[in-house]
Length: 238
Ligand SMILES: NC(=O)C1=CN([C@@H]2O[C@H](COP(=O)(O)OP(=O)(O)OC[C@H]3O[C@@H](n4cnc5c(N)ncnc54)[C@H](OP(=O)(O)O)[C@@H]3O)[C@@H](O)[C@H]2O)C=CC1
Ligand SMILES: O=C(O)C1=N[C@H](C(=O)O)C[C@H](O)C1
Image (cartoon, protein in one colour):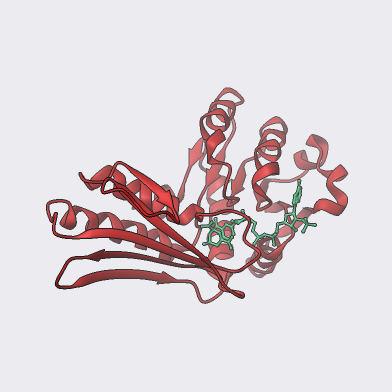
């Protein structure tokens, strides 16, 4: 499979290693320095694009891939305010868009565990809940995309919580997500329920970026024979 790598930062470089190990070819490698090469014509020469850039450029990159008629796998976070517009464009252009706030298989299992725990906690009004995410200091967005995914699942299940807030003193109906930035931390997410007498905590801690990159390459392979709007639940059969 010939991959267009859009974004060649920490994730782009990690993805390149895994893709080559799995026998794929990098047909196009785009960073800020050669952005002029990101054209429909160049994308058409590839089978799939993997996009890990910055929130401000992600959606324009998706449009180019839809115009080129190649599937796009994206892990860029912080652009979800434009989600409806992107999904509409993908459908109108008969494109394929695979988005994951986190491509790690472990985190996607953690998402399921988080939902199960929220179901158990839904009738337990003696517990309050909060979340913490810790990432490296270069991260541009807060809270993390993963934390937002976890929070959205919890808000759908917990009757006492209507919305999430970031680094705030929460009202009773708000779920606070604490964001901490520290050194080179690849990503830690903790959900904590606390009562007067105890607490229950679940944590996912990434040891490196390898799991994110591996999941993104699996997603690109999946796009070769699946079409439309896809996610890790489809890929992992969850
Ligand atoms: N879904 C997941 O599993 C994961 C998602 N992420 C997300 O992926 C994104 C990237 O993370 P990461 O690789 O760590 O970040 P980096 O900052 O290391 O890399 C981003 C790269 O994108 C480049 N870039 C910026 N704008 C453009 C553009 N318009 N076209 C092409 N390239 C561009 C940057 O170039 P330059 O440095 O020259 O500005 C940089 O090399 C973030 O949003 C992060 O949250 C990260 C890990 C896992
Ligand atoms: O920026 C990162 O590094 C990460 N971003 C993703 C997020 O925002 O959730 C995934 C992972 O936690 C690493």
